[in-house]
Length: 319
Image (cartoon, rainbow, N blue to C red; front, side, top):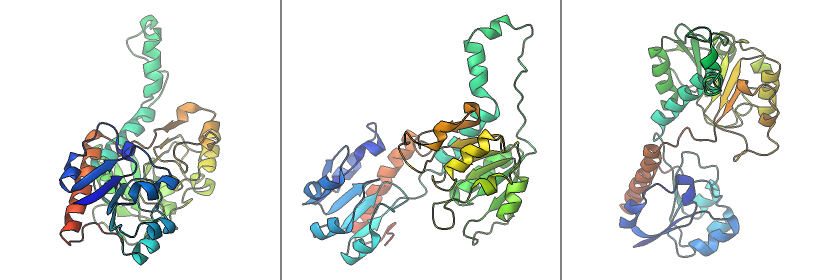
């Protein structure tokens, strides 16, 4: 039996069932683990499971029995991949588990601002509607989504799902490939400048890398329509946060929906705290991926990754 140590179980939530892992070995679950606790907690572990804990070169040197690190996420920038390779430790991630969840959240965020939901909810709760002269309330304008142009940055699995839903709403779909390699015959591929100039809604679904870091700065935001909305459910750092706040404060764009930040949890000094009109910015705390079914699916995927590894098969091995 393998010793399996979960370093940061709280990142999956207290409502998730880990029992599928218990069929594969002796499982120890830690709620959170600091960097200096890793070696003591994993000294007998052949398998580590983590989401965000950083595993560095000296950890690999100190844990010669370690065979596999399983990530409860797609990204693996918290693992020293070169050191893992040097010490013959396999790294397995999970992917494709959150497509429906992130697409769902993309539209939930958009409609919250697009249809002025906060304002209308406050209006009725305050009792003002009880004193209305007419049956409706028309002091806040909003528009049909049908007929608008939706620009997608990163047409992977999530981007495609968002495109399908937006198309069902009657949107015209265009997309920009951050790698330049993605080609899809169903939708119109454009360069970034064209996407900026023509989109009424832009949603970001790409990873953070050298090509996408600060992809949206004040320069790009100035090229967008003043009535346009931008949604980032990709990674923090793709939009320059200070520049986005400036663009919103100057009314260069209509609004922004943000689920991912450069620093998570949100820093007290975050530029987003300097927004003047709070109705133009909607932030959720990195929850697009987090419906309960999605989180449970992650554990199922990790279980399958470990089962494959124990059978000398490669499944989602990234190194």
